Amino acid sequence: MLEIERKFLVTSEDFKKEAFAQNRIAQGYLSAVPERTVRVRLKGDKGFLTIKGATNESGLSRFEWEKEIPVDEAAALLKLCEKGVIDKTRFEVKMGNHIIEIDEFYGENQGLVMAEIELGSETETFEKPNWLGQEVTNDHRYYNSYLSKNPYKNWR
Image (cartoon, rainbow, N blue to C red; front, side):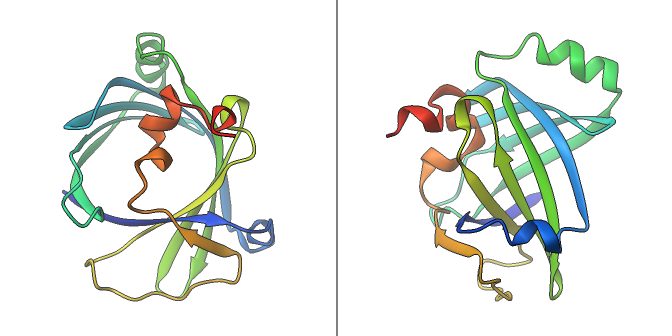
């Protein structure tokens, strides 16, 4: 139940031709405080409830618990979420032994394209495609919970 993840900005749309899957995602937060987030997600034809703990000192790891829930329940819970439901498409690209998830954001976060890769350890290496740009793992502004309250459009 430990998530080890690195985040990067994406520099081109080349990933789209490499993607083997894509899903539209709507996600909101029942709680989005730094110590814990409680997220509701509709991803394609599935619903999920996720609880994440605070990030560790390195910014790479944190507790994560996720369960699939019925779509109608996820849709009902989304209506209870704090303001700022995230709308994005997630593309999945296989790179070596890893899957890179690329999120293209819409609405108030239009223009932001970010990649995430989950690792088995904080020191694990991975193959980096040419469209992977600046690492933003330790920048809290790129957490979806932050983006829901402080959209990308307001940064400029």
